[in-house]
Length: 268
Ligand SMILES: Nc1nc2c(ncn2[C@@H]2O[C@H](COP(=O)(O)OP(=O)(O)OP(=O)(O)O)[C@@H](O)[C@H]2O)c(=O)[nH]1
Ligand SMILES: [Mg+2]
Image 1 (tube, helix red, strand yellow):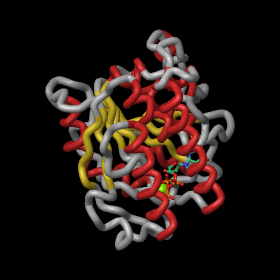
Image 2 (image 1 turned 180 degrees about the vertical axis):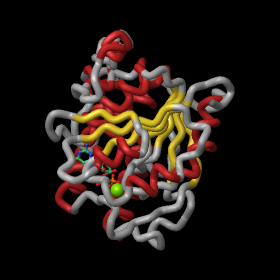
Image 3 (image 1 turned 60 degrees about the vertical axis):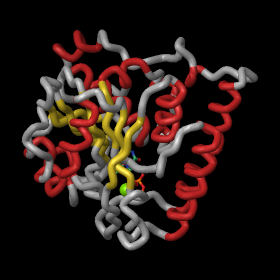
Image 4 (image 1 turned 30 degrees about the vertical axis):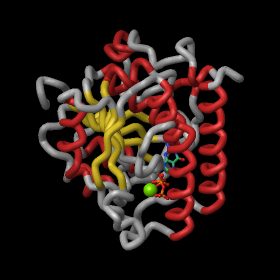
C-alpha cells in the first residue's frame, strides 16, 4: 500500500522461465497484488509463477503481447488494484523502481508514469541495438509533434497507471500485438491524462526477450499509423473507436466473474 492505495504489479509473460524468478525476487514488499498472465508459453513459466506465489492466469492460446496486457489490467482491476504497474518478466526493467513509480500515481501527482531509458542517457551503453535507438528517437520526435506533449520516449515497456486510466480508456479497441503499448499512450494523451517519467537503466542481455527486426519494423509502422489516427481524430476529419468515449472498455463488472473463476483465465 502507498497512501492507502492498493498496488498491483502485472507481468505479461511469454516464455519467461529463465528470468521470472530474479524479476519477482526484486519486487518490493509494498506491492499488494502480483499477477502473471501467461500467453501459452512453451516453457515452465506457469509452474514457476505458481511456485513463486503469483496469481496466475493462462490464455488458452497465444494471443500476443497487447491482448496479454488487456487480461493483466482486467485481472488487476478485478483484484481491487488502485495503482497498476506493468513489469516485463524478462528482467529488462529493474523492479526496484516500482516504489517510485507507484507513489507518483498513488499520491495523484500523475495518472501515468513511464520508466524512460532515454532520460538515463545509457540506452546504447545498456545494449539497445543501434537501429532500435535511432528508430526510438525519430518516432518519439514525430509523436511529440503530433500528440502535443513532450516525452523522452513512447517505447518503454515499464509503466504505472491509476485505476481510473484503466477503466476509462477504450483498451479493448487496441491491437493484440506490440503496438498496443503505443496506442495506449496515444489514448492517455487524447483523454487528457497526465503522464510523468522517471529515468530507468537500460538492460539488454542474452536471456531477455527482444523483438526482432521484422517485428520492430511492423511496430514502427503501427506507431506512425496510431499517430496519424490521433491527429485526424483531433482535427475532426475521422473518428476512431480507439479515441471515442463509446469505445469498448475493460468491464468493471468482471469482479463477479472473478469470484467464481478458476486460475485459468479467458483472454480479455
Ligand atoms: N503475450 C505475449 N507476450 C510476449 C510475446 N512476446 C513477448 N512477450 C512478452 O512481452 C515482453 C516484451 O517483449 P520483448 O520481446 O522483450 O519486447 P520489448 O521489450 O518491447 O522490446 P525489446 O526492446 O526488443 O526488448 C516480454 O516480457 C515477453 O515476455 C508474445 O508473443 N505474447
Ligand atoms: Mg524486451
